[in-house]
Length: 303
Image (cartoon, rainbow, N blue to C red):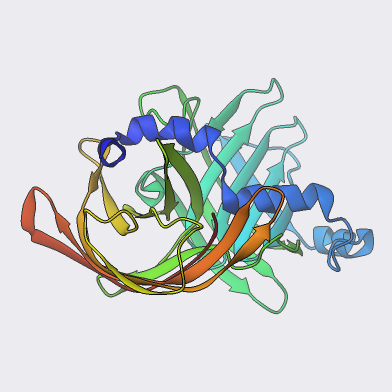
């Protein structure tokens, strides 16, 4: 199918225009859920007084930076703001997987980190995260681009540290996303979106490594366990980012998935909340010896 040959560069357009489930919920709730138990002004002031952060842009230290942070489900966003109104937003999850760094300039110019295989192009280290206090400590350095889908675009180099208490924001739906074990290593998504090709919807989950998990399971899926092959209408798939070509290699995948829950989430929009498990073996279409085993997969998504 055409979707399985899309270049990583071209994927950026769909990322911009499609729904970003994880951080869309995060920042929507920041503005709307002021009634969250942890969002009172007293709690926020207490947290902010203990927050520390510093950053530099092209080697110039930000003056008098302030730091704030929010956590929604597993997703964290740390915002560092200088007195010249430079704003740097670092997004990641509580497990230390990096999503993005975005530099917002006072003139409304925005620079962002490269989104594919993010850990290969931007250095991020979550030194600690305390579940009881929601306090996160970390450091970062790397390039942010004027066109974040183009490694040759104009860029700025940013670096910094933070130690912050995260204000908790309740997500609209908890636990959305995907996780699995890829060749024996735990994998968790940091972001997701949906592409539409004809009558088919392809849901995609990425983390900060080279892997992408895809599914064409839709809201009409029935409960039960089902096998799939590369030719199946309902299937899961793995893609691996190639740093030489800057393209994703889409593997042929054979395995099974199970739907454990499927119910109407939004009657007005006809949306369903579907969750289940998956496992499969992925084979490089150009090299049959290149095989990747994916197991213990779980997902929960609005379709």
